[in-house]
Every structure is written in structure tokens, then in C-alpha cells.
Image (cartoon, rainbow, N blue to C red):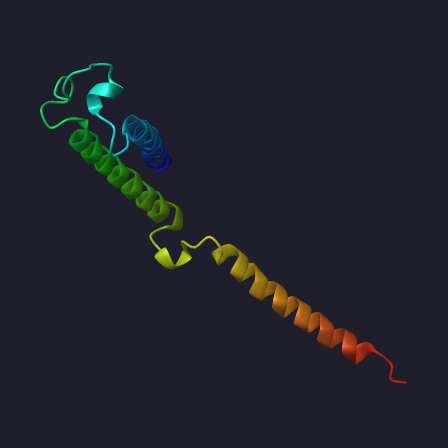
Length: 117
């Protein structure tokens, strides 16, 4: 099980780094792909006639999907398949309700032991 978690972590990290690189390779709407790669001519030299925008957009979408699927699988593996226990504050809510019961019972026992004036 730990091997599977480690493998998915590696996939997630590779996907995250790839997304960062792909986003940094993309440029604004007014920029030309030829200007980015140093050629003064058309944008068909490196990524084909359609330019780099279509390729980079699709690659970014694919790696983003891989990243989110890996994240979801890690959540399922770490919670044992119980999605109700997947929240960030779940542990704190359970501890808070247990502590509230302890505090309220302590207050009740202290109020009974006090001597009235």
C-alpha cells in the first residue's frame, strides 16, 4: 500500500512540475510563438502550422487532469475510501466535541462542590 502511495506522490510531483513548465512556456494573446523561440518568421517552425498555443494548451490540460486525479486517489487512499472523513477540519471537529464534553462535565462537578454562602 505504501508503494502505491509513493508511486502516486511521484506522479503528482512530476505532473505539478510539468504544469509549471508548460504554463511558463505559454505567452500572452499578443505574443507570437516565433518571437519566443528566436525566429523572426512564422510560428510553424517548432510546433507545426498551428503554432505552440494548441499543443501547450492541450498538454497543460492533460497534466492538470493527471494532477487532480492523483490528488483524488491520494485522498481516497489516506481516508480508507471514506470521503466524509476527507475534510481538513474533520480531526479538529472530533477533538473539539470531545473536549467540550470534558469541559462541561468538569464545570458541572466543580459547581456541585462549591459551598454556598
